[in-house]
Image 1 (cartoon, rainbow, N blue to C red):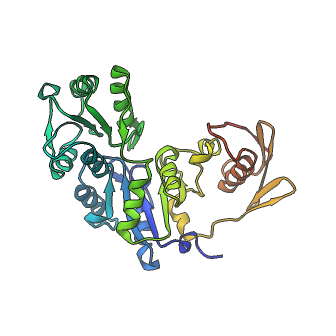
Image 2 (tube, rainbow, N blue to C red):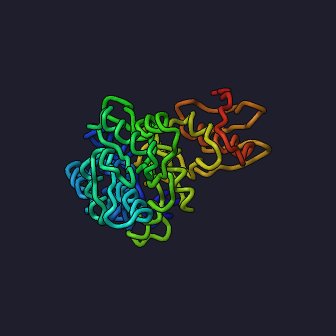
Image 3 (cartoon, one colour):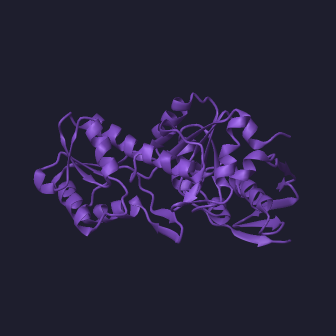
Length: 326
């Protein structure tokens, strides 16, 4: 059996929680990404973080030692500005609740960034920036409540940092939603166009989408019709992956990016149970019985295979009791 990655012509990788957490690379991630090109696998980065330009993101990746040309990065800021340009005419005023990088993307589409609702903006675009404060959110709320078009670059509730999980753009969007009772149009993940654009840019026909979040990376990759891999170095955990609703279930579960280069264990059904490696799992009512150890990723892969077969069309997360028999 060959390596998992040998079945794909490109990797579309998330950044936060996959390549780095805060300013620092996740151990082993850079070496794994550098090993793709010698195998003929292209690499692109798909990020919901709209606080930096693609060129700035690529420069940071190169500083960490990862392979990255400026055009290898596709961001939700680009997607948000594109969506904005589809809804308002050239020259329209846009309240930018976000970074200078997001404002530049808006300008590049022939629109006029403003910073106050008193300038009567036609639209509001909201993206993550660590410098946003209450006054920025208040200006967005005033404009949105008045009827301005509202676009969010993404709705990630959290963002991995070196010290742990911090509030993401979705948390800030939720504040404006709570104040106005309105919902934004969302441009980035989990919408499919961001992934389709990245694949098209790489000329990839069979990409693998890799991310740490089910609700953005995996859902978006699935919507785009691509194979997806959840990696356990960021937000989601074996427990949350097991409980995932059908639309957010990954094709593969990886401990780290090093798992690209190993054979992916086959899930084998037999007599109502699923075997992965030396682990066996069976769905039993509201529980999953697992013959294996909690520290063995194959045990979780087997548990997912059994539970997902028993609940193939789950529209909501389901959290089974896991009964271990190691």
